[in-house]
Image (cartoon, rainbow, N blue to C red):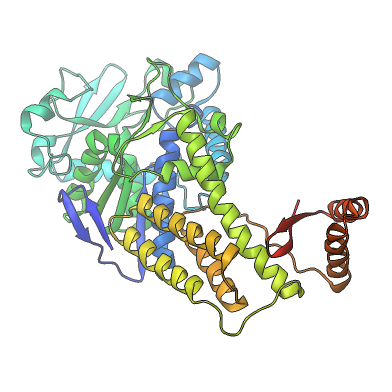
Length: 474
């Protein structure tokens, strides 16, 4: 499998051991999560699923930032502790992404790793990569960027660009690019109970050091894959790489992978524009699998534009795939129930369509996880199946193989996970169906409707097709 590595700026062959170690930056828990967060979660969950399908065991870590400037600010505003705010929104996030079929992972929090973070800062000071600045309410600790010669390699920024992009002004810093490892306690921190003891006085960690520490603690260094949104490349991931490299002396991550933004009608989501789309607001109207389909409908390294029109298009495409899977399943159930005839020498079309689907799907995923092409392969297969089911001779073995393959590949994309199989009916129910078919031929529609309603009361919908009566669970 080839992926685009942000560090080397090129596609590279993924060379992995049996166990893959993967770290993805999680949310800063101060508000309900938006569909940009959802895209990151879904993209890397899909990569994980594909690697597991290929036979790897994946140790997947996604952290939660549970103490931070924004969390503190919200806590003070609402008269709560930072922990009350962060725990509430972490729970909300987990609730949201569960509906998108994102699998469980290891979820360390910053506050659970405070001792390790303080120890790491101390080691950076000892190695000469950091320095202490005395402040009014304690000491701040900064990472000295010029001490690491390869700083800027991940983002690819020039020295001038790096100098322009700093957002932590402090006249006491040695260099404009230096960033905080430890922040002395401010009045807001005390109010929000976001204060921790350290050798440099009370305070709390800077944003970047947390991921360096948690990634090393839970995965070791170097580890295989680091994921996140492309907005994290700079400064967060650049700084994370710098800290980890300074601490360990080795390049900490083998493959850096980043997904692009979710736009809203061509504009990036922002509070100032008032166009932030929260996951739970979308889920009020659309099934979680439809939102997941949408988030994978564009290549992960390209921006995707959210709108009602695009969601409706994805809903219809998703339902077409689901209806196709059900159409195959209905034929399987009919054959197993004795309501159809299985053939020993069927047309090979369905077998060939199934083999082609697997080849095209795998080729798409192997090329930098090209999910739009994977969906295209599924839709070509669906078109073929719907034509074959109407016109060709069918065989139970070929149908079962087609169903299993489609279900298996859709599961890699995280859709049709909760599909309920069409049940095999007993002989008495099949006799009732045959009676209804006879009634319809004899135009005894009253008795035919009576039998149809009897099936509905049992939880089944009868469907009339050119092949005969089929059924589904209501």
